[in-house]
Length: 377
Image (cartoon, rainbow, N blue to C red; front, top):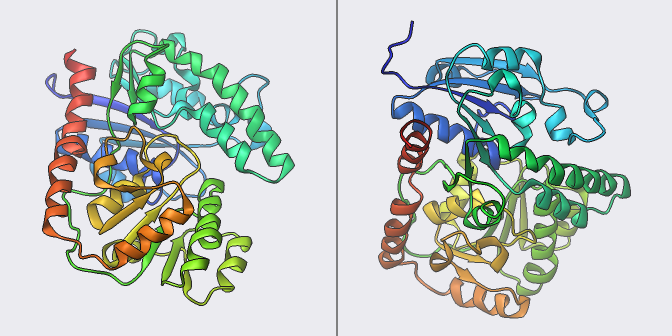
């Protein structure tokens, strides 16, 4: 029997959040860890597909339950988005209904049961990782395969409709300021809780590096599009050392990189290798064509790297604008890269980062916000 002073929380995760090796699960894992460090007893529920069970999660959670995600043909409801319908489980509902503990749903993906009568009296919070329908709409616009484009279009429409389920949430935690501004127009109890991440303090090196780095999950349409843009429109014309690093690069990206001996592609790097690249690059060059959420790779670059050169969509409404060099024009960007490659990265720049990041992007303070919101408001 649990102590009456203990705080217990159900967390429903869209995937197994360990190892924390891509955007969404990074936020989930480091949130769980920060809550654990503050004494919260976590009952974790994971939908799994292609990721193993985790001893680390068993260590920091009171309990861990795994549920199989439905196959595509099992989850194509007429009105429910696939990413939601594929994460339904009678066993999950039974487990969530078995006690009075509050529930934190990670992403709209996990909200199939948000309005279910069995949990109506419980405090229910939703962590929004994106405005999902906008994200899928942007995926549709970036995709060239017509069948996949059609799927993204249908999913975006269903997600926009399903988003109305958020009216059944008692708390909504937006991951970015722009998401917060959008959600507060339609829903109550919105709070801004910035992304959780794998950094305790700024570890950037002073001095100079000798290459420019772009990193990301290259199997994602958005990141592949950004990497191809960098290779074709920026790196190809500069003849400076560029490194493109990330998971599952496409054949098109591999083919393009091979044309340029000064551009290196590092496929499926380990966490340690990415950390090494971030620390040693002179410029962490990050660009995106989607103004959605907050990019965890941007936070990692600021905590671990030297200069961060970004386009406006990467940084708008993140609160990180003052720490980056921002430029959208490719020709100006090329001149900035040449200038930054000649500059020393100084202690002054590191101090600026520490002041802002420690005050606004601390995992501990974000976890304290969640605890206060769920139990003390």
